Length: 292
Image 1 (cartoon, rainbow, N blue to C red):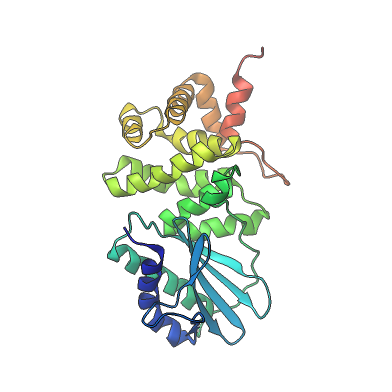
Image 2: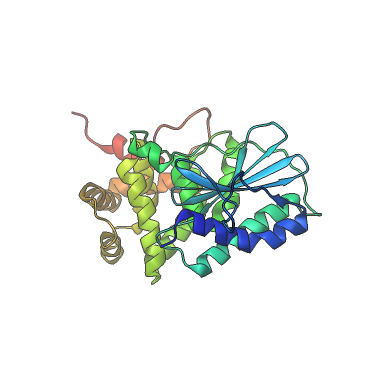
């Protein structure tokens, strides 16, 4: 298990050479103890800071994430990327992989061949501390965490809100993320399985009704009522409501009405702004239930 400062010190070591090549300088906190890593420490986060001309770059560690943020001049910091930084689980090789991700992101943005493209701000995610204080997780937070687990999804995640001006969970998971999630569940990587359900369980137990629909219907509904796969999920799920709902949803999807709902997922209606209150599968389930 790493503490936050030690993890940031390792990240600094792994990124310094690349950052210096691009032209960034490490910012050192005032009154830093001799020999200590230049880590800025807040109440619920810690970060490294770098500058280049009028650009300030911060690598912010909070919860089990590391955000890459930037600002120009006196502007506000904007998050450009989130990466998984699980202090309980990460080892040296995980830190090296994370450093490669960060260097690739920063190199693409600020290297000699970088192109400046106007992009919209990344939607705000809900932190664990906010969730503990009663704020419910939303679809964007779920997708952000899943994209940190599967870096291949980061482009699709960014393109989603760039395209629609809001985050559409059904589109992201059905067309992109579910493929990776199902590969993990069907595979034999126990560590990846543990990380996946750590995310899904936390989001389900502390999420809104809409995001719970995404977890058990849009995502885990793709288990197709397979008893072996559901049993594998059961090994990682401790919340009884989560597990019982997962089982109920899969039984429903195996029914004639459920099969029609799955077809709806394959052929979704055209996007109509400004909002989607429920996942498509959840709507289909609700519409098929007998009226009281």
